[in-house]
Length: 289
Image (cartoon, helix red, strand yellow):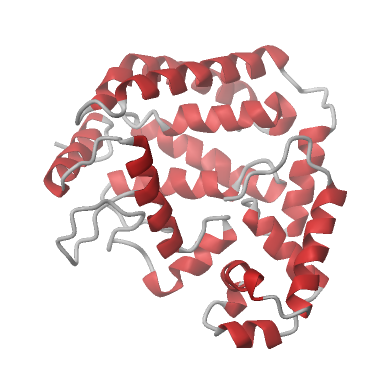
């Protein structure tokens, strides 16, 4: 998912959409990969075919919106409006608490991630406290939208919650709140996709978006990828990914592998990963012992 600039405006995004349409009209091959993924009607076309297809400003707006994690231009516009316009419901103290706590999470993860297998256990107490804080906030506000805590606070809410793996009930509650927030333009589609896929995968159920890192089961390659074979309707997987702002699966896996190498993070073997996944599933209440 592409990151919105600081203080984004509708005018800025309009210009981006017009530029995209102009490049398509000019036959610029540099936009083909982007358009052919996020405009799902183009996904099975060759480069020349993509550039010959009609591509209106409405099409360009939709592709632009999906780059940023919104299924439609309308949802993107709503998000920009709610992120930039003051609201009577805004809670500055909670917004500050979320961003400060997320900074603490980042510091803790940097301390442990490259050390050894099972590093995640070091965050158990921190994550339990995060769940307690977020559940109280959910009870008061529901999903912590940009209107409540600002864009940065909403993003911090997601990152704090998604790392609280060992609580199935909380993970499902978060995913449901995000799902309800999507049509209101109050959450990125990618956040929902990763949240629900993580809950489904740890529950040993088919995922929807292939957005949980796992090992493919059809080969013996010893690397984790953003897809397991246990996914619903695999033929249309990239179409679903496009609608929530997730990149093409092959590109996502290449970037995932590059990130692991650059960060020098611990690289699990397949057996280690399966054991850890089961441990999380049992401890978090996703499956019964």
